[in-house]
Image (cartoon, rainbow, N blue to C red; front, top):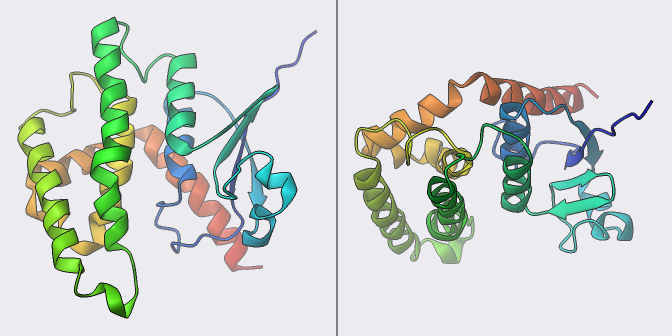
Length: 214
């Protein structure tokens, strides 16, 4: 009998965001839950992330990584795309719709996320730049809001593109900026209401809760 090895992802040993579900293993967990794919996790400390063993998997010493058999991947977007291509439910069957879903995944990481990440810089010298960064964020959100309109998802059925886009937008929750775009706020809420998201969030939060009592 052949036993299939479960994929393994690396995650923070201690949550840097206080259990908000913003660490980059979250979209990977979510994708695996949407696909109905069981997985295992390996906890890594900030120190271990910089050691040769982990850098052999992730050359930049970050998380997550993904291992399945002889395959080792890094970068959350690449991992989500791999999961989506290997399992049903995250990419449409139609070739053109599939390509558009992948385009939205890249748009989330390449177009929408960069100014959102820049906003998170916490340095005194950065305050003068913050208004320009927030203007850039609002420009991106305005375009995205117009495109989404009153639809549930970005292009027909829920896809890996939506999963990654909502993972990016969730980073704005505490800023109040997302609330300026009611359809985007509702869009994120629909994603968070999905059973697969709830399972992924609970699994990530459980790691943080366990670390907090140790």
